[in-house]
Amino acid sequence: MKLFEHEAKDVFRAFKMPTPPGGVAKTPEEAKERAKEIGKPVVVKAQVLSGKRGKAGGVKFAVTPDEAAEVAKQILAMRINDLPVEAVLVEEKLDIAQEIYAGITIDRNERKYVVIGSAAGGMSIEELAETQPEKIIKRHVEPHLGFQSYEAREMAIAMGFKGKQISKLAGFFVKLWNIVEAYDVELTEINPLILTKDGRFLAADARLNIDDNALYRHKDLIEKLKRAPVEQNERERRATEEGMAYVELDGDIACICNGAGLTMATLDAVSLHGGKASTFLDLGGGADAERVSQGIEIALMYPKVKAILINIMGGITRCDEVAKGIVTARKEKGINVPMVIRMVGTNEEEGQKILNDAGIPFLSTMEEAASKVVELVKEVS
Figure 1 (tube, helix red, strand yellow):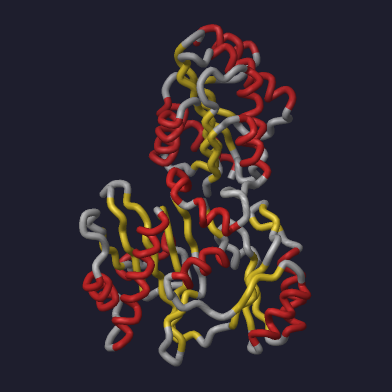
Figure 2 (tube, rainbow, N blue to C red; figure 1 turned 90 degrees about the vertical axis):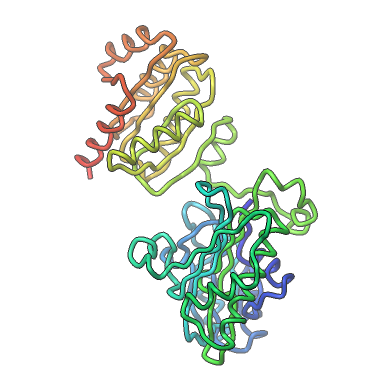
């Protein structure tokens, strides 16, 4: 479950973590009132469960309350990553001396939480890892010990802070860890954590994702938030309604498969051959022709898709039904991106005949299919 920034900051404040003064507004008039209450220049931020708000124009500054109302009007009219902006957060514009990154997530390879910090905040941690990996400080957390204060201090020192700043920054990391333990957090992140020119540390942003499997332990929080645990875009809602597992990614190749394991393996194969997946779409077991056609339609709704890779392991799912679904989708959906098909298993020969008759090529192995779809995307890019 992802929390909006203002919801996450409510949690932060409950753990005595400093945040800028401000409040939520759902109309330009409310934004104007929040700015009046603050009495200083403000930042107005879209409240959507999506990253990269700033790049999408969802974060703007205003000097006066009237300006705050105007930029709030602009932001409230936006959709960011297909999500409508229904509220903005109006906060004091901080006097920034330095932007810092602080976060905690799960390192599945190590099977431990990892605390991450960087004195070069303000940009995505993924981008920072590629361009300046030496500026990222990590500390894995021993499960039976938890994250200790001395480890937080060591991180602050490794990030280049001195004197009283060490204790102040270490305190942020410890409080983040306390939140992780209290709410079964998958990911929490402050980017940027601001060091102001007068020496204060404040969480200017807040990201908090709670493990869906642990939500039953946090019914009080869900009740307090007064909203559904998940906010979905149109494609995600459609997939959920159809009972399909669907996750959007940053690439351009839609991977449609049956079974989570096969879908993950397909994503890895695409990556191995130099491509990037746009879509994880698991049709589930026993998919018939109509379900396959629906899956293709949902995948094509995502504008990033430049090619589709369908990888089916026929067991309960019959390859002839899959082939019928592909042929139907191509006839009825006006597909204008290349499709690569790989399917083996139950009724494989019948399925291949249906595809042959329709002039749709197929490949025998996942490696061949992944290589082919990456090649096709490069041709159309």
